[in-house]
Image 1 (cartoon, rainbow, N blue to C red):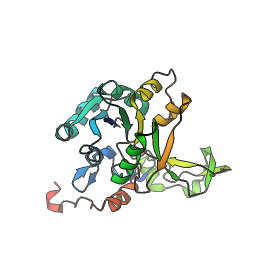
Image 2 (cartoon, rainbow, N blue to C red):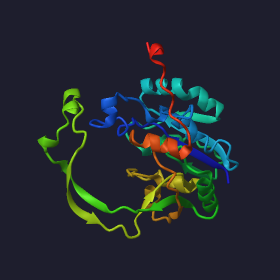
Image 3 (cartoon, rainbow, N blue to C red):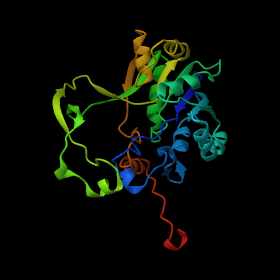
Image 4 (tube, helix red, strand yellow):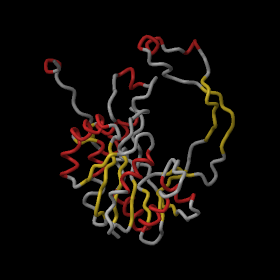
Length: 271
């Protein structure tokens, strides 16, 4: 196999810096891909999962759509991407699938398979990557999954107005609700329900065909392949393959990867 890996990295880290979260109160208005993991950024750690793999012949990173944001992204990551052999292309403006669609245009003709991996999954175990790649040699569409172990509930989208639980500090800072409350409206049967991870790997021509459909709205690439009526095969995922989504995920991710947070600068060096 000759695999091209696409890493969508155009997101705005909305949930990482979302209104009403600890990130607002701590002033953490930055991209989660810039966070430090043992002296390397999240994005660099993610690329390093693939850049020396014998089956990977190309890595494409889809950066921000906005020209100013892309220039900043290139300034922060461009040199390191070049050293790692990764190509940088302009990603999507609004949705993840737009970034994948943009990156597909740069896939080399000799690529037999295309793998899509979340930029914010830097701790993917090598054995999981090998497991997905090995299955992709036999099946046209392969995704890693893990079983759902927690009880699932559906809640109302409207938040409950409970002034007694209002956070005065959040109100002063204009951060909104730090602990939104919702009403439970029903349960979800978790039988045969799984949580999907990445990398997701597809035969080149199959993914190209999936992205030629008129409606490309989907939460993952496998959903577009399923829409064609094609079979998607699952392999065992891994609990360590977590996605950095919120600030609280960062210490957990560092613990999984056995790296330390950067040391704070001495007080006399902060100014």
